[in-house]
Length: 585
Image (cartoon, rainbow, N blue to C red; front, side, top):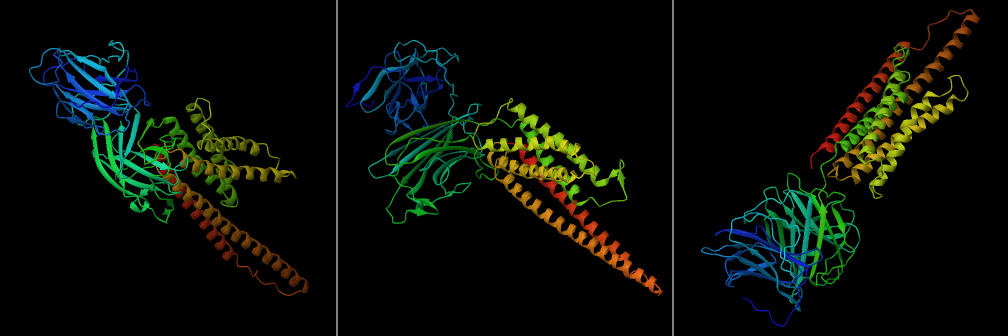
């Protein structure tokens, strides 16, 4: 076996443990072995893993897909590089004709000068029993009450354990040839997901060099280099012009862990410090490490990460020295039906119902004047019905999210802006019917004040509703998985402006036509009176009332067409947003 030179044996530490997938064996078994630190902050630099029989003879053989270790010909596993690591994995193959107990032992080098020998071991009995994992204390040789994750003993590809926790371990070394060799190990990354480490000089996602490891839908793995120029929502592919040459090496998925390995080399000095709006990557520059987790679409393209699936560490790292960085995140749960109901109700309410109700009150007061609904003008009945329904639905939608958050506020981050604007909209929508209900009589000299107040509150609530929905599409990335909803809301805002301009134009044409008709009527009446006084015969009115009626008919028809077009677009946008709200992750 390899010998340890230049280092003194240290007293055993309780910071490490060795676990196996079983505490017993049968001839021919393949037994999964894990050596790791007790916590994510506990690392080691060197490892020697081997098995002995009752005669203290090295037995069996080993296989491993762990990038941090390799096999040795005399029967064992040793570290592949001196990078700090938190855990290593290997599979021990029980040889034939073996009797008695097997002791699997790990010698751990925390650093070049701190070595733990004969401290970490586990004993396998020769009975075929699949019970609990036994972890031997490095101090007492008694079983510890430590929970270990039992991994499959087979070396075949398998899915990660069914939980929501994703762990990313990134480490790299720097050699004498100025080459940075990086290893990424991602535990529990599901099919069609990606994990990334970014190097940034800021504490946000702007202006970063990004390295993304993808597990595709067919369980193949790839790794690539990107940049995230300031203002870009998605990273874009990068090349050597952004600093250094990126070379992808080993990319595999084994035993529930995704491994991506790459190198960065050939860094050159250049007078040009920026390319494509981002400072070039440098091995001598200090960076904040940032991690993100996200999904892939059906074309294996990156979807934007969720809001809680990104974090930046305050520490600094450099590519010119060995580093080990870890990141843990809890995968987002399935969308709550309460959240989906909240979003769907308010989208339909404020995009379709409220906008249509406003158009009726503003531009259809003189339409269908010969028709009544419940002895009220058509526009009034429609407006009252739509706005009453919108007030009820708004309060209902608010109650859904109120119950979901258990009566509390969302955290005071970006999402808090949506909550504040939303509460204002709910308050205005709740009091708006009461403002209309307690207006003065039409003959009152103060009636105009209530009319203007009612209109002002309604328009403010409508504008704020658009703002609230836009904020939701931007910041609630667990609901809206990409920028599609945000783009749709921009289209909706532009349409609202366009439809009001169109209606205002038609309404002014109608008012102008009525004013012209009134002037001509008054002029004709004056002329007719003068004719009678002079005793001259009177002539028919010069105003062609048929032409006037035809003009009014055309203008009313144009209003109806605009209203129908608006309803179709509002329905289409509402349905599309609701589909996005209910889409699966």
